[in-house]
Length: 154
Image 1 (cartoon, rainbow, N blue to C red):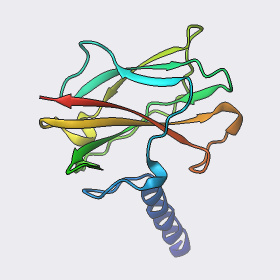
Image 2 (cartoon, one colour; image 1 turned 45 degrees about the vertical axis):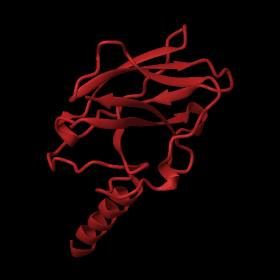
Image 3 (cartoon, one colour; image 1 turned 90 degrees about the vertical axis):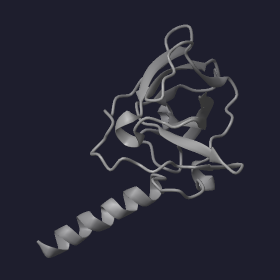
């Protein structure tokens, strides 16, 4: 029983370490957004509030089928560096649902960060999503890629 508890604690620590859930630290280079040819993300017009936004992902890469999920993180720009804002400490989570773009290469997802970060203060932020190729299922931290969109809360 003691070994099982230690294993669970170590696994939890490992997951928190690789998930990029640091507070007030610069974002690890491993979790930095990258440009992927044919994939872009934008905030849907009139959907941005200090607690949520709807993102529109456009995927016309034609080189593979990417899988998108509900998970994301918010980074805030401070002194020309991106940092993760302090989390609320609430028990927040994401449904593990795989989404694909439609026949026109579009996917809309409502992203609500109020549970994780509360209402965002004025500033420049980015919403970062991890994605992976369907052929890389099951996905691992090694084969994930990150896309982002910047926005400003006034």
